[in-house]
Length: 208
Image 1 (cartoon, rainbow, N blue to C red):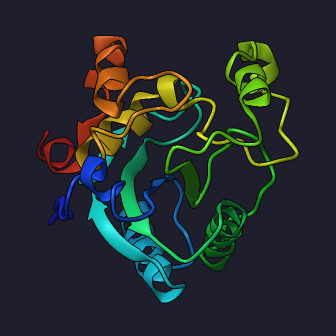
Image 2 (cartoon, rainbow, N blue to C red):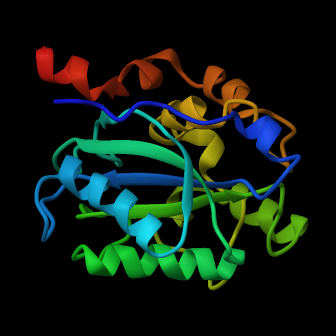
């Protein structure tokens, strides 16, 4: 199966001339358009239909379900876009696209037809640094049950997740987390090598 190729300028340079919106995509169930790979491609097309300009798209990766054992492997990717949306409008658009492709929000961290997550919007920390730090430092047990009632940016679990950072490093390796002071590449390289190895390019997974 052909893989999407990384294209466009790096995020570090685009920040000087316009907004840098970073999104993560994932799916492990068949949607109303087909298998997870097809769903992710459909989501990319819907982003454009809704008004986004895609600056760079990562390859697709196969990743064990999170938490471990929670259903089939995921297909994950990342995309960098420009769009005439505020952070809140971006989140609303992501939810709309998820719904268009059959996503039903029933279980936190459950299996799903599509996750389309806003990871970062330029260097904004929302709603404020103190609230962001509280959600970033939330104990694992509370992460399973507590859901913020407002948009938290950057995504508070960004720095912990190989399935986000590996594809994100394909499209925005130089983007720097405004609260942690680390680039995407640096955050990726701090993760457990075993976790990184589990994020496998889909073309390689298909051949194995």
